[in-house]
Image (cartoon, rainbow, N blue to C red; front, side, top):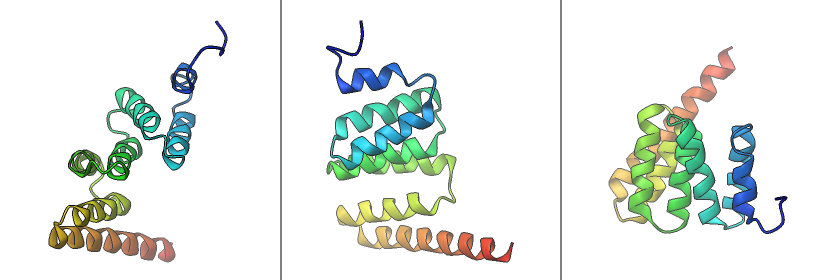
Length: 128
């Protein structure tokens, strides 16, 4: 069977095995286009194959946050930080999500940590 009759998700899933980087790109595109269910499925496929893929873990968290499921988003940000505790973007996004749920003090703390990590990374790159 060709691509006729297949959903976009099924067509994308057919190519997941050989090219995980392309799948990540497609997941990001789905997310940006508001196709959150497709984005989640694609990110989850990546995590099935690479459980420590922090970009995909963060992608799942970001999608849940966009969907308004902040509790689930916070769980996934936590999983991503388990593998990459010095990732500025994850800390920052976790902080934003915490603020959305009313945990402003903890949220601002995470945001500050994200900014601090980003600044220290930026400064260390300048010294090279």
